Image (spheres, rainbow, N blue to C red):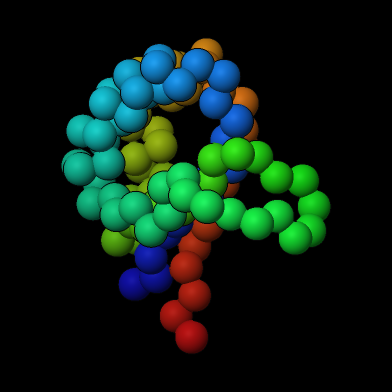
Length: 97
């Protein structure tokens, strides 16, 4: 089964309130088996637009990644994130090769 990934590029406008997003999202991440591969950290933009925070979250499957995003647990967190950050988020199916 192919894994699923969230890939996010975020610009946080309220770092203190963003902590509320992280705390509120944690139960959804735990329920759906999320594992952070990238969570902030140093980066070097080499092509295209960039944002100051980059995140890659691995899920056991593409379906689990979609289910997490659409879960009631994550809905509350998403509302907070959308109030305190601007960004791009995509759900991507992994490659078995």
